[in-house]
View 1 (cartoon, rainbow, N blue to C red):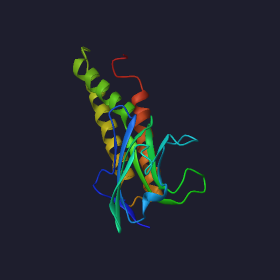
View 2 (spheres, rainbow, N blue to C red; view 1 turned 120 degrees about the vertical axis):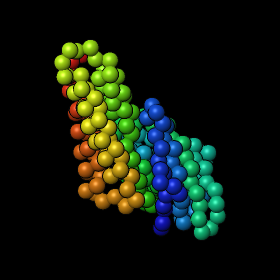
View 3 (cartoon, one colour; view 1 turned 90 degrees about the vertical axis):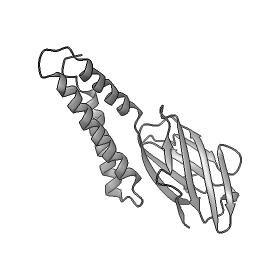
Length: 180
């Protein structure tokens, strides 16, 4: 079975991390009740959709290539696993697995740090620390996203993507330079 990306961004997360748009190409006929399952590290799936019953998924194309497009409502954060599966059972056949990073809280942090650094009225060099931290957090987030979305990520890439994301979160939770 071959399921691949139709474009470099096969998973797009909206600005509130509440909707995922999934676009994949498959050579397995998805007309027989396939699903897109979303997980973000919780013990249960964060969301799913049937791709053949109008539950948010659409199928186009014909043999040998079908295209699956699904918009899935799921509040996600951090490392997100998206699977094309045969059913929602724990023994489902997994046709393909893709990863991305849902960055909403970290992006909010970057904006807050940047604003704090730009609006800082401290009479010391501490204002630059917020901007430097915003830059570090942004670079960590970009690295995490790159590793997660590689065409063929290894388990080490996925583990490192999650590590980079968690380090970005940690930097966001520290107190800003001026004590705000």
